[in-house]
Length: 611
Image: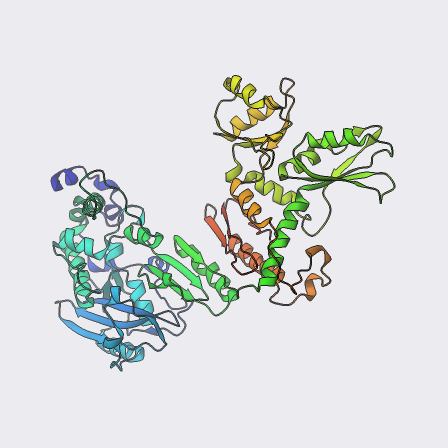
């Protein structure tokens, strides 16, 4: 198998060859440059969060004969974040010159025993602190020392030390598209030795440090071409398939990918995650998760704008105290009110003796009407029409505004409230939502629409699904439907046909993603309100925005929206953004959270929450 893999290797496409060439290189050529150290988040002088880091006694006199020192650290999770618990330093000949257990300065929340092997019993008698380790390292390392490690940025950060001359074996033996192989894999395929055995609790820091030295020496001795000929990518794929086939319950049939968390998937391809938060989370226990804990939401935002571009995957978490049940209920009512007002239109003026039934029929043809009310407070009669779906209200505005009805040009518009001030922007965003691409809304259906559609199916290439809602009580088909097509072009062609003289229907591109419809339905039923609890309807609030308390739900949501917008504008084009809003659970009623997704394209894109 090895011979086949070697013979199939295209050396020119190998990332190691592309970086170092085919000839052997010296030690200084393997050092990470300052730009690479910045890219891979190594601590540097002047970098954010490195103000109090200790600088080693480096003086710049690095040569190909400079001494190598293998370094490996283990850490635990404390109230501050990740802190050092064990450090090993190995000299070039393989001799361990420093092996220390370290007592963290802050309260330990998780010993991370499965990774570190450290337990409370082991750490209890330890008196060595981080400052002692820093002092000893400065004493042991000569001015021209080169530190070697695997994902060494994490070790230097937990040491709170800066050293500019490093070789990182996860980057020295890099795979395609920046893939970083695990140390255990490299030790096996390069050096032919097994390490970090699954039966053993925790990693052996001396063994890890010594292995990184051996890998570096192998690279310097044999050169990049020898490494490229091994075809690490193919060997890694072979190892993964072999491991999957040995999973319990696998009888040798087709292999299936095991259920892996996001962090495990990132770890398998050698990628790291940045986690910015105010709170300690179990994410912080992962070795390939760089956690930065901040003291405020403002600091989270400031750190994110600096650090996010340096990592391929990021989680930025803004934290707020749970809303009280009253505020949660108010937020729920506000969302329902917003959607209701967006789905409501006012039409008029009509002549005083207009045919009311004809007017009702005209608006009914655009979609299901929840209610229609005659407004008499005006000089000329108007109608208030509340639709069941947003598409019907939008269709009424687009097709009936300015038309002549019984000798009167009518105007059709939404009510002007705080919920509808930017409705046009929101409608545009909904229409561009990927969930709505290729879906159209069609109204004015007759009872035979489905049969007619099937008979004429050849006119509608790319038709994938027909959604025909029914009335809950009568089970009769409603007068509208949603049609899903493979492409937006297919949908546009179908829309033109339906609006033509043969079908005489009305429609437009869809606005309401199905998951949003389900979410809205979940919050429509009014929860049972306990006696003595009053919820002020949003439209009757006595206090204006500026006078609301700091922890008011409206203020919290607005500030969250502002922070997300500022962070979004600092991202590079092409960045995939996911915004997760938590749901609420309480004795007064519950509703699920909501997720928003967008790929940033241009600088004028703005992912407003709309809450």
